Image (spheres, rainbow, N blue to C red):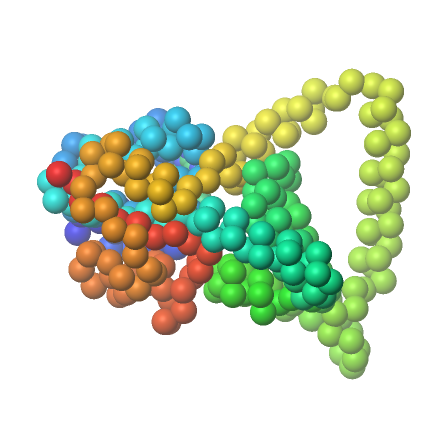
Length: 282
Ligand SMILES: C[S@@+](CC[C@H](N)C(=O)[O-])C[C@H]1O[C@@H](n2cnc3c(N)ncnc32)[C@H](O)[C@@H]1O
């Protein structure tokens, strides 16, 4: 099979060629896509990437899309999924207005949608504020959050809750109460943070912190650009694709698409916040 999944993370099919920075799986080739795609011209029938393009700068993203076009055979299918800037913007404005009117749910939804918009661009630590939101004892707008980020968000949440349950002694009534050990750890962390802040006011930023932040920001976790149905269509056109169609998670010109469980797993959309698009190589 000549199907290619770029920046696959943990979402790949073993019959495809899968590429990511690093992986512990024998089915994934380790490679930095900033150096191009390590495959021959016109060697693939399908190229797919999901929630990868936004991790490249606008310029590098265009280079990646050119590379996708290069490795595809004539009439090969390109499928891209990215977080949809348009729906995030609509949700932001809708919840902003509702929050101003005093809606309690909207207040929480407004906080969440702002995280979707900014957190992955500005964070300097893995997981960022979004991770903290999903790891708090009680999520006030769980339904909204899971409708936005789907199966993946639910998996993160379930992993957190099962970890919490392991730590809790048997018979503890409250499902979400943090342990005493955790509370003490949190207090110590806060104190160290407060001390560091005081020191930082007097001294330049330590080199180690600069290197750590730089390394993190180049590690592929942060978002460097965003797309909507207009800009992504224009990009596909620019690099040489035709028959460009916006689709949903279930629709595809890739034969037996649902069988590969990439955008849909057991009939559930893995990343509902996505914009899905396909083009054909001329
Ligand atoms: C948000 S994850 C998406 C993973 C998967 N495609 C999915 O839909 O769940 C982004 C992935 O892109 C990978 N990635 C980002 N920049 C990369 C690069 N320059 N080369 C290779 N992989 C990269 C990351 O390692 C990560 O696995």
